[in-house]
Amino acid sequence: MKTYSPKKKDIKRNWYIVDAKDQTLGRIATKIAVKLRGKDKPQFAPHVDCGDFVVVINAEKIKVTGNKLDTKMYYRHSGFPSGLKKQPLKDLLEKKPTEALKRAIRGMIPPNKLRKEIMSKLKIYAGEEHPHEAQKPKALT
Image (tube, rainbow, N blue to C red; front, side, top):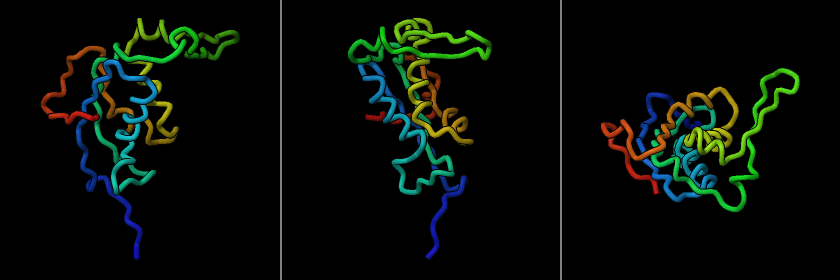
């Protein structure tokens, strides 16, 4: 008996739409990451991108629990001495409402060669409008 390994031509990609309004950041990010990676499909293989496309709307209306708006920090470093910059979640959601969700999902995807390909199938929009009506996305519950 041989082990089945999916090929790129065998993979059927579906489109899903997620309404992030009043959803918790981490809980919705895990569901999206599973769909993007394709772990819910029977032909999943970790070395092949088997995932589906996901469109997220209303990313600006996402919720977080507790004091995370003030205490959760996002860090980046310029590479120069004393180049560490930190930004609280509240400021990040005001300036770039889609970035917090994108970072949460990106952290759930394995850091390998497929990460860029997997993340390119994620489309996040701050409001209700999106240009993917032609793909007829199904609602992800």
